[in-house]
View 1: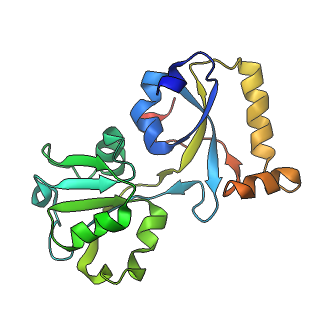
View 2: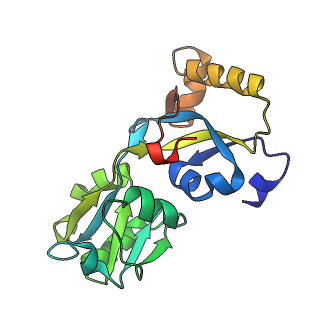
View 3: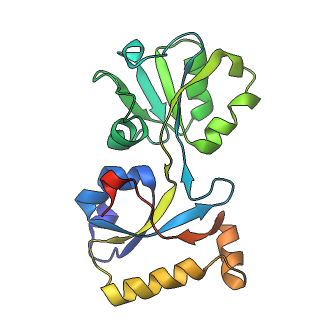
Length: 197
């Protein structure tokens, strides 16, 4: 946050939850949307609870929600789970230890987990996967964006950069660079209507 607030920060590559949480405050303008290898340009987030419980919002009152996106409670409540209104007393917590979080859920420790698409697709491989269930899923949202910070890139340069980024991934040297970053290319931003700038 401090780095993006400094005047030398012109562009940023940010996960979509970060954009939802901090985009307005930091005046972030989407330039392109990432096409991530194995995921694509958009993904759905899945709320996972213990099998046999947590089937309604009321059932998770007082719970802890664990997620890699836990640093972005606005994203969790108003994007990922907009149609599944979390009770106000649900504590949203960031974690990079998703396997540990899922064990807590499976053990019935009054917690649920919000998983990105790749994490959710791995659920079936877990030895305790039968103790978990998908409760609800978000609409499709972007995975990540390259954004202009606080209009610090003049419009003509931003347009030229956007054009160049959109051409990457269509063969040649650009594809090699992208593959090292687990990217296939970029597309024009496709934001949910409520967040379009």
